[in-house]
Length: 196
Image 1: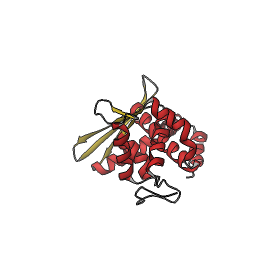
Image 2: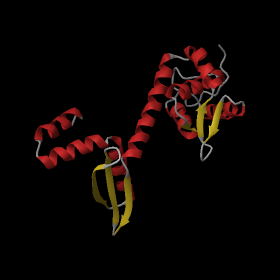
Image 3: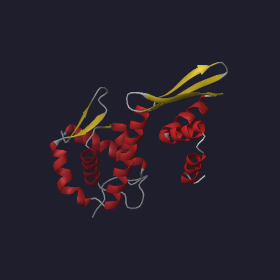
Image 4: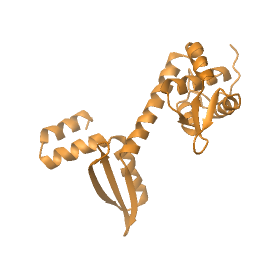
């Protein structure tokens, strides 16, 4: 097989043909059944060493131009699968190495799960005297189950709190609940489960 794609930044086992890259894009958009932001799609593939960044960008533009995928949404940055993309995925996804399919799908699912956590569990960073006030909201659907505020001396630390909170708001909730109810067993179980 001859390779026709740039290979810079690709991990061993990554995609080295333009055709494989197009199939992977169809596979991802079809498998997750939800539109992905163009930058997220490029990130999932490029940051995981599955294909070259420039090749992925070119493939998305070419596929949108040919009507294989649709670029739309408020900012025209959402990529969606068309019937043609679904057909390509169904017929050709076995052409991709199973490790590439698995790695790309796991990355997409993690991205969507993180976006859902961030959407449901808001964090506000507001300038305060000599620092920033970080308020974290833990959602229980349409209701806040809990919210708390922390003072951080600078924006970098405030963003670290935001990032760590979004990583696992449910763990923060369980730990705070265990501490305020005095349930040491739950708190110890959380620490043991996290490897601390």
